[in-house]
Length: 243
Image 1: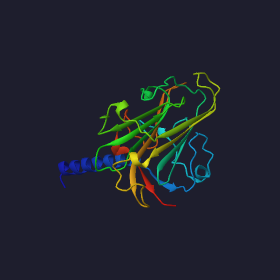
Image 2: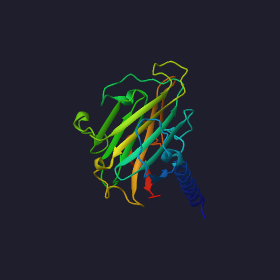
Image 3: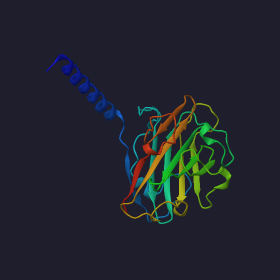
Image 4: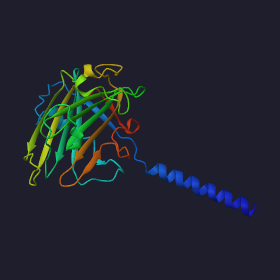
């Protein structure tokens, strides 16, 4: 084998190893099994129903830009019934802060939890829901990536949500945590092939949290690895179990 050939083979091996290493460092897309509830959920933000006690957490939220661990503890769960898909968040927070009180304001500029839901990944539309510690809602239907309908033109009529605080929303330290509960009507999830979903149905989803005080942090269930939440290819997957 000539020197030139040896050098070429070595270069190809190094390139292949680098590609494999890079692929291995990209976090896998998470999968969460959603259980069914036959008992009604009272959407009051308390998360004290038996369904929430039995439901598993989706897992740790991480820093969205690189997938690294976050010091902000965030827990989220999902359950469903024939009429609603329910979301629960519990956000540990020593300094709870937000100021926006009107529906469909730019809640992402302050502290907030967010749901991005895409029932059919073969088409580009998805739903975005945001709730802040003051209990303000932003609900958006997007036709594609960052292509929303006018915010006030799509407000879910049967959407329900609530928050509970162990602290005060004043931007001062000394708080404990806040919780959020959301009930998204199945009838709003128009791209789903079956409503309610049947066991084995799989949808795409991501969950986020924005924190500002005392330090800015953008967290995700499935990190997009960009400075952007609107990256559907990095959404995780939920599987409806029927259990």
